[in-house]
Length: 433
Image 1 (tube, rainbow, N blue to C red):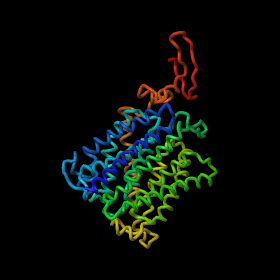
Image 2 (cartoon, rainbow, N blue to C red; image 1 turned 135 degrees about the horizontal axis):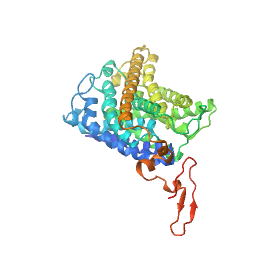
Image 3 (cartoon, rainbow, N blue to C red; image 1 turned 180 degrees about the horizontal axis):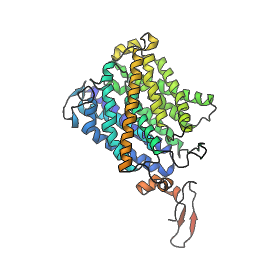
Image 4 (cartoon, helix red, strand yellow; image 1 turned 135 degrees about the vertical axis):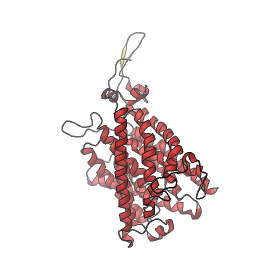
């Protein structure tokens, strides 16, 4: 019973991360899209809940070497350790929902609402469960090879990050992001406070994400996992700041926010396998490389509005590979997955397994995402029109604005026909109300 209560509590923390993503993404984009960005979290969360219950959980954790073939619709009441199927489902579904929330970063400010519905369902059937089963399924082939991914740097974050990258490439940059000569125009988010608050909520939720993956209160190991998680996150903020200073970049709020998230992503695979000092190293490097990656991709015409691939993809790759270097013998023996890292005399075996897992994940998710999005683009449509993008997805997709008073350009009073001018963002123009 105690373990069930613990995992239920952790599931609630991970579910609360959805609120963090809503604030983070809305704050990091323009106000004309804020309501749309926040509301699609409700839509996608609902889709994942039903689809993962029907087939996703069975595909991920059912019996089978290549894919699960049992326990669809939670039809087989089994115990996941000391946890009931229902509690296990709630916990694992919250992870799948986070992975999809990450993917949405690459769709931001350009994709039709219908794309979220279709791709959300397809992602939960054809993408997330496959890698999830290979790594976390009891008979999964990467699991049998000893791939170390304690809480999902690969399964959750790399998958979401790669899907986001494919989407943002296929959607093409937002209107006005690049000049004809290829130079970049900044499109700042409308509320940095929302972004910071969202990141703090996500950070809080991560204490359900990583420590909850122990699946038990026994021996208190969850406390150790919480320690390494926090050290990795805080070191990553410092790593991002240091790299920005080294590159003579302005210390923008987004750099600190993305640094924090990158550290959390990176430590997610290794939190149960590495010593505290290694968690700091892993986090610091994650923050630094995320700053470089975000700048590199932006300059090459890849308009990733919230830097989903740099934060979750690049940091996910590094976090997964890091156990191949830093996995401690005493912790590997405790968790009983894989072997010791290179720095502890374990040779290249674990590093090779980690690299294989990363490579397979990138290739599979990229190919399947491209195929699915191509089908959606062909039969349904993919990107909103230029006019709809100009007006904002709040009005074009939902019929109202999150901040209506800021988006009225002219208000004509019915009584005296007096026209009142109201300030509005320069990239938005509307007819008289």
